[in-house]
Length: 402
Image (cartoon, rainbow, N blue to C red; front, side, top):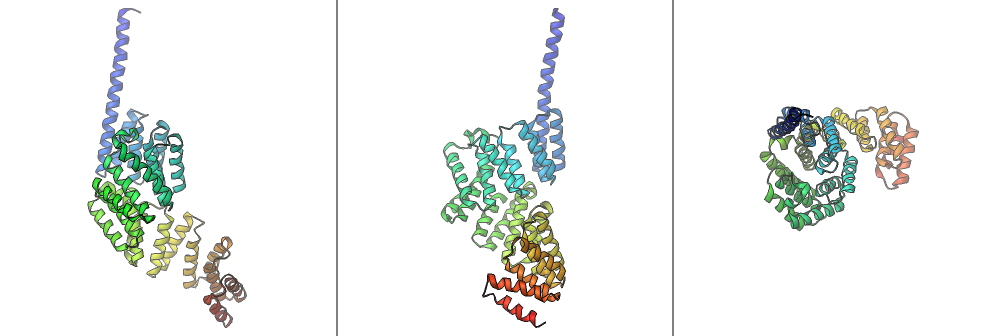
């Protein structure tokens, strides 16, 4: 090879390296723009910027994570899932994509899947603090408070010794956000386990890092656990005042709406409970409990048609949620739709033959439908299960006199 050809080859190689460096820089610039747009609530534009970063650098796993977050905030959950899964495939050793994916699954009420994702990573990296906290959050959602408490205690003990700066996987994590979340979650599970002093100390530490919607949400959960529902409402309202648009549009913002609905429901303010539940469900159509509670709130206000619709939605999400059919069957009885009531109660009794509420509801429907012998069989079954059930005794007499 002559000198000119060597020179040209060297020039081409150097040019390619320079272009590669420029491409990486351009991709990083687009990603930075995407993060800024997320902060200002411009999620569609953020998705566009992250997409441009990916077009320049197709293996840019941080861009997939960032775009997954933007998709989540824009309520494009299937796209968010796809981006997180691809980011995990690109960098299976890093925890952030796993954690975001697990949090999305939990928000979509796919808690067993969320636990599976976190446990999968922990089998490879058993010391991962990020995933331990992710798993603790999933356990808390399932009321497995002892397991959640052990995990948050373990993470806090290590962080208080080493500090966040010395943990490699936390180098991209905003310190204030992480500590607020860890201390807040620890406070909630401590309160659930009646470790009140520890809960108070933890929430106080959380407030030293941030005093925004995140902290107020955890404080509201503690008040809810203690049965102080008005204070729970007050905390959430204060949190909304201080919240950024990103927080309000995030899963945390909508989880706060669900907690607000539960607090109002406990207080007996059904109209405000309905408003809070409907706001939550405007972003998340996957929560059977929200539909069930919304149905109960509508029923208490006498809006039976709306109650039926929400009980139906709850049952469609989970065919094992038989209480939704029990509630719906009771409304059908009120509306004199006895055949529909019989169908609902029979479905319940196929799986729970000793469900006395369903037996009583079906007996009433059978009696009103003229099937007295079948009604009597159900009422006798109730008295076999609960010999002192006065409602069944009274119904036997009334149905026999019709």
